[in-house]
Amino acid sequence: MMADTYSDSAIIEAMITNYFKGLHSADTELLDSLFDDNVTLFAPGIRRSKVQWLELVASRPVPQELGHPFSYQILSIELSGEQAFAKLSCPLLGEQYLDFLGFLREQGQWKIVSKQYANNPFCPAKQ
Image 1 (cartoon, rainbow, N blue to C red):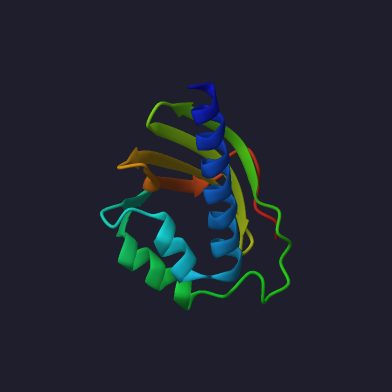
Image 2: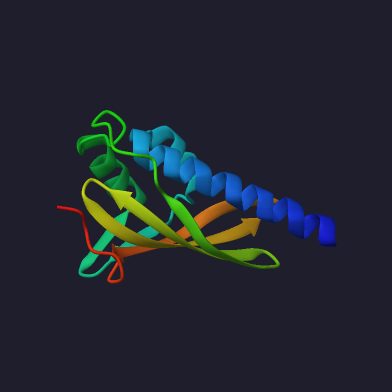
């Protein structure tokens, strides 16, 4: 049982690393592969489907092409059986976001099933 916990943790950490890579390079195919098709992305006053969010990512400036540093961080991961929750620091395009991702393992496969994000109130954006 402990081996499963370790492998699940490694899978979730790898998914988060790919999430960061996808954000940084605007790789919508990579991001699409991580998220459940029915996910809704939430921010204060905003609700987006996965399709709407991926279209936004594809149309915005690409941090990697702008030379922005890759300084995303995992702040915490809570793993409990077939569900997990991650708190992430996502500096992106001059803003400092705090992302909360919810993960669910179904039929042996982990997917991101929820995303909440907002400006991090503890870390002001760089001007």
